Length: 79
Image (spheres, rainbow, N blue to C red):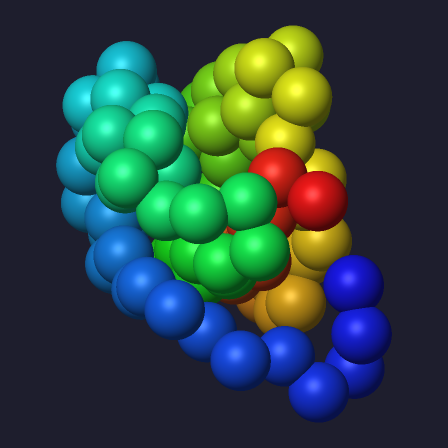
């Protein structure tokens, strides 16, 4: 993924429990074309691990854009 990223869809999943955040990511990604990008904000911990592991298992490419003590921001694509 390039440094200049155009975000096609954004999800703020802060405060949501597992597996809701993983399911919501999958639903959005299923409706995006292969060249489109999803940006997601998640809570650190179980939500982060669940989404990252699950989406990588499904073949999506992920990049951590930002991470602090409470939240992680992911960039997700299928390319």
